[in-house]
Amino acid sequence: MTTTASTTPAADSRALGLAHYAARGVLEHVLARHGATFQQQIALRAAVTAETPQTPEDLAAQVVASVKATPADAHATLDELLAKDLLVTDGPHLRPTDTGRELVAAVGAESAPISARIWGDIPTEDLVAAGRVLTLVTERANAELAALSS
Image 1: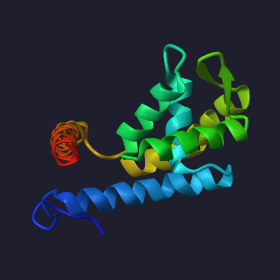
Image 2 (image 1 turned 90 degrees about the vertical axis):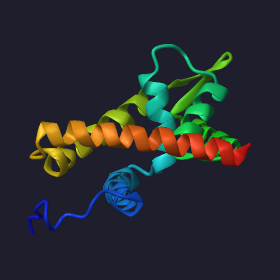
Image 3 (image 1 turned 180 degrees about the horizontal axis):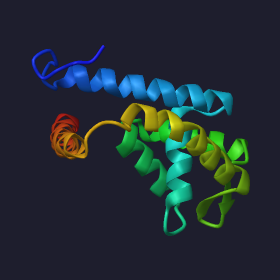
């Protein structure tokens, strides 16, 4: 079914949540085939894409910021990645192993055609507008969460 401007509801928290969980469900399906979780993928991808070596605290902070996990949960995720030999300790840093890099690449390759089907025909101007709105919502929600946590 194709929606039009007159039948499409305005964006709100519910619509954002539904879109997030639908897209996350697709990714989690791909990750499950590799024995990985969403949170593991967030941490491992951060390690793989980092320009400089990351400490456990650096990676845990990125997981906390990305998925609003607790620091303890983020560190548990790093421990899982170490146990699976997807990350390795190198002095004060955690580095992705070749297996970890291969996992990120495989998940990206498997997800790419699905993402293309999901996002492919959305006009660029709509994506730009949505990007602006989502960035603003993220900034405001993070500020509210920080206020609630202090």
